[in-house]
Length: 414
Image: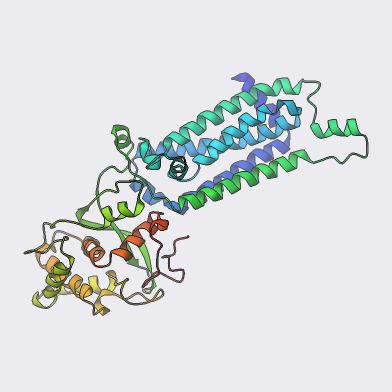
């Protein structure tokens, strides 16, 4: 271990190699931060993971970034103190760097690579939701760096291991054009890793967070169960556009089965079935048209008290949107202002729920639950929003609708 630290001191003794390590570390940090926010956010990540999983994920990412900086510096140093026959040192380091690059960002990026080689379900075949890639990266990077540092002393004292550019100049004479190997290599490596990260970001934009089975997965907090949330539009403070939001629901929403078909999985999550416990008479998710008519009748037949009416007006005027039938990309229509049958049904649903369950559920839960019915009446719009939010837009290309914003994508990047 002392010899390794001594080798590291030799490499970082000159300011140039310190700058190489610092530059690489900063670049990898910024790219990792940017990649992370292409698919999720800190809040959502922590909501979907336990403390143990989060610690392992972020600790591994930080260590990989740190080791990558040292490894690039070691690659450059060894290149400048090696003859061409000793390129195996650089190959080992580059192998670790490439492995670390593939583990950066959201772990689901690897699902595309696995699918490309015929592994059905991508990362869903692994129990740790991609942590295997980070662990593998650490092993490869750490092993290759250990090997490289062990070669520093022998390269330093090797009589034939002078800088290649100097060697060529000596052999060819004073008129030889000397190539700035150090600078070219540094920028080549930086460009290679940056391009790789951008490619991964594009891959991640088409991937959704995956769920997994197994005792270990449960221990790490990876989603294996259904939840009480649904993804649907929420009006922005401007009152004109919407953002995709995880609304709490009253009934349980099935977990994403994470099969090889993203659209089929989305239907499992978004298209409700059966009869919810609160539904009266023959109202059920299995008969959308009958449910629409029955809920709609309650708009006129149910009278609410003063406080209940105030709450009802809040729901239909400021919270629930009619995004898929009217309005424009820059002007969402609130439920109160929509005259369609489905909007009437939602208003009747709110009256019924406030009257019978008003003391048990919050306004957000009622809006979230109403979106479960909305998904039956406008399945294409709700499914495309879900796939967009989960990074699987390619399964059902998103079409702009009321409140989707100037880009038609609720502000999400393509």
